[in-house]
Structure formats: C-alpha cells, structure tokens
Length: 334
Image (cartoon, rainbow, N blue to C red):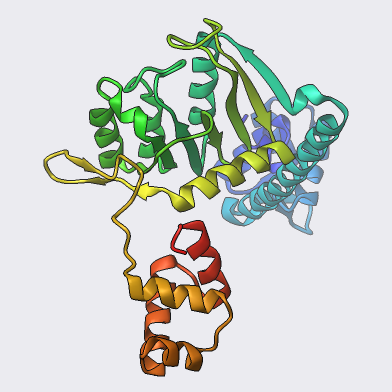
C-alpha cells in the first residue's frame, strides 16, 4: 500500500482504489468486489467519507463516489509534509540542545584526543566529507599525516561547492611536489595565501569542528606517532577560528599564472609601498597633529595632505584614521 503517508489505512486504500475504478457503487457492491464483510465495508466507507475521500448520496440504496485524487489526497500530503518539516526542525533544535547539555557536562564532547597518523588521516577525511560550506587550513612544512598531494577529499568537496581557504607557510613550498599540488588546488577553486610562518597545523570544517595536533609527530617529529585534538563547538574552537582569520588578514594571496608559476610563496608581500613623505605624514598624523599643521610643517597644501591620507587608508584597508594608525603600526610603517 502506498497511501499510508496521506493517513489512509491499507483497507481504506483498497476500497478507495475500487471506487476510483468503479466510479460509484453501493456498500454491497464494494464488499463483493473487495471480498469484505458488508458491515466492515460500511465502516471503511464511513471512515473514507470522514476523511473527505468519498461522498455519498442521500437516496437508498446509498451510493458512494470517490473524491478526485488531486482534491482528496494532495492537500493531505502537503499538510503531512508541512508537519514533517516542522517536526524535523523541532528535532534538530532538540538535538542541538541535547548536544549543548552534553558539551557542558562532559568534556569528552568538546575535545577528543586522536592518536596516530592513520586515525588523524581518517578524521581529516571525515570532516571534509561532511563539510557543507567552508574549510579553513593551516598548512605547515613537513607533513604529519597527509603527504602533499594526497588530500583528494579537498577536490571532492570543492566540486560540491565547499569553499577552501588555505594558508601556507613559506617553508611548505620546499617540500617535494608542494608547488604543483598548490597549483592544482588553486585551479580547482582553492583560495590560497602565504605567510612567513604558521604557529600550528589546523583544519576547521564549517566553523563547527576542528583538528589541531597537540604535540609534534610524523616523519620528522617526535614522538613518532602524532597526537591531535578534535575540537567541537566551544570557546576554544572560536579562538582557533579567530586565529585563522587573524593570519588570513595579513597573508599574501598566491598568484598562479597560465604557466603554473606561483608568486607570493614567501608570504612577505610586495616591497614597502611607502616613501619618506608618507612615513613622515603618518608619524605626524599618529601624533595627533591637525591636517593644517601637517600641511604647514611638510610644505604641502591641505588638500594634498588629505589626498595622501585617503590613499594611505585605501592601501591599509582602513575606513577611519584610527584604523589607519593601527594598521600602520601593525605593518611596521612607523
């Protein structure tokens, strides 16, 4: 029977199907065709009438006619589907509440220790296979669990629309085959940047779960087998994501040309973009000197000073002068 999802029992479906093929019939005629007891058939027909699946005449003997299936069944199925969606949403909310309770009561629900390279590889594949939106990576030199080029799960995830933001440290590109593998990833859609050095290895899936080695390990580390942490939704996870974003902000985007050459792998960025005039202007600005006084001291027009400040803000990615001062200090422009 196939109409159970519409709230129709097996016997009711049998009788309804018979009426659809018969057009109209008495309870006796339906009973004979269905092989049911007449009294039982009348009860089934009454149930179908209560569900608006059949209508009945006023005369005797009473005749039953099926309600058209699109009128009788589709609205019922839609109501059931809407109710199912609501129940699913409630179940999801309850599951999150349940997990939150477990996280607060059981530390093991927040941090799970992973021992060994093979276990680490399996967990890295699993979080990528389950990722829906975004993966964040810190890639350091000298692999622990996955040799360069062996993470094929990334390409499967990229193909289904998962965004990859990957940070490489400068020394990573000294590993055998590293450049070619980065080129392959970038061409597949990976967003890659480089920095001079990364503090740790890290993989984060959907900002909901992270893997972070706890002690050195692998081919060039000690002990021989790595020990890692699987970190779920918590303040620690939020800190790891914030750490990634902080490094990402300062990192240099990797540029791959048509020949496969990669620029920016040193993570140092372009040469110093400031000249002596801009540095002096910044120093006066940070010291709190007004634009008019800056212009007087530097022998520039006030309009020129403001234009140079605007250019510096654009260069630093700042929207206010306070942000410009902070960025200038952070980038070593002062």
